[in-house]
Image (cartoon, rainbow over all chains, first blue to last red):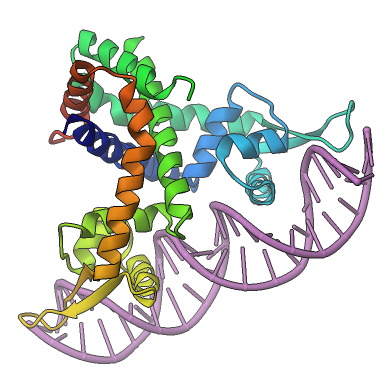
Length: 137
Length: 137
DNA sequence: TATTGTTATACTCTATAACTATA
DNA sequence: TATAGTTATAGAGTATAACAATA
């Protein structure tokens, strides 16, 4: 069945890319979750709860995650003056620099895979992934 | 640049599918790593070191992982008579049943995404993922 | 001596429950 | 009362180093 072949391909690709991301993160003592958080924070300044939902984590898990990143000087917490219960999270300059380094390395690590496709196939792959996975539902 | 768009699409797809797998695993108290190990053991009976390499884990990490799965009755260890240092790992009948259940659920969970593509696009996506990621190098 | 696997240790990741502060 | 976040706790996941058994 075609759909089973596609499921297999998606699952295998997921583990393969996750392995690349895990390895690159580990070289800088970042877990896959921290790597992802850094990526999200590159262009957002969410509150704790928003970031937890985005990452699929409990808010208490995120407290610890952000604690550790804060102790390393990668992120900072900011109080929200409108609602003093809320804590905003954002990258420090050091965190921004690390995030750019790491995602640059991800691009380099995936380059060999990408270069196996000609430009037209790259566009096709982007469009197919988007159509399948990044649509509502 | 096209290749950056493809990197973004691959990374986002990876986190999205990993999220589906994590959720399905969590419903049965399986981590993403255990879910993957169950998938591998469906059609293999590796030794500990082989499985550790396959999963990208240290052998000591795998000892603990297999301990916990063994206590739950999902896998078993077998001594290898040719080389008595070696420990083979394999699914118990309960582990086989759980693995089939879980991967059936994965197929169902990804069905909506897959059904957004017509059969020709599904084939294209399988071929493009394979060409990019499942080739040597 | 080298290899296979386990154990001891330490730290991170994770969720649940209880808590504090604010609304 | 309800919401935002932290803390306490417990267990799983992970790697490094030291170890035992076998080759």
